[in-house]
Length: 392
Image (tube, rainbow, N blue to C red):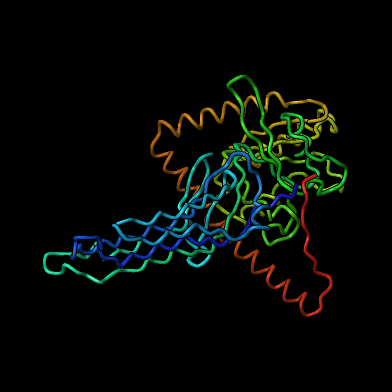
């Protein structure tokens, strides 16, 4: 199944029905008076968050949605039928942006949430609505109004409690595959993860959380290099980020230098994202001797004194139980604090808004870069090509 996390659609609400000009004409009633009915209201376009969807790919093939028009009024004071609403299903976690004003119209983060994005036109009035003691035979009616028309950009941000980030081949896919039922592609070459994946980590009947894995980041990701820059928005909703660091990189690079480089990219993409709790996870620790691992862990603890530093090996099943247990405790404590500390809840909401603003800005920059690439391709540059990522 193809994974698409951004799409643009056009929505058109229904037109209101026209009012009717009519007079009552019956036997033995010479002057029955006006009886023209009002038209029906136009239908609205409403987005609905559906738990069963996890991609915006459908909108690539059907980008236009239109609600029904209201029907005109008729004689005998008959009101026209209202136009049927157009209900458009979108994945949970979809942010809706008006491309003309760049205003964020809403964020459908809970299954069943609804968002009115285009209001139907008002109904027209029939001549019966204008009768009065001084105007007993009005010939005035009003037409139905046009419904709202909008061009919307849909951005999907996966709903996960914990997000994984790190260099390619840092062990993210292996980790999520070991602690959850997710089955991501795992191989011994970079960029085996082409699209984000979700996994539910269960520690008990009523204790579970969702973990998200995104493609690996490289230096220059914030400027569009690599694959991860396209999916960094999926870290926006995560309550805690796990930064996986390979303790023994194949290229012989320094693990701490790699960690600093990745966090510099994250900071360049969205400084508010750095305000999220970030945990250091040293992965593939079974490849190092105990003494070397102790020294490396001490270096990271010195660099990040306020962060937890975990040591894990997904294949060796080392440290996974401790990591997931600590994550569950952190998430439960966070939820309780949000529910009881009003100031903290307001800070979390304000932080989410700042992150969303940065994501929108980065999306515009990315779109501008793609526009430049397309222009060069039209000029005869055959080196540029469009890549479609497919979930395997």
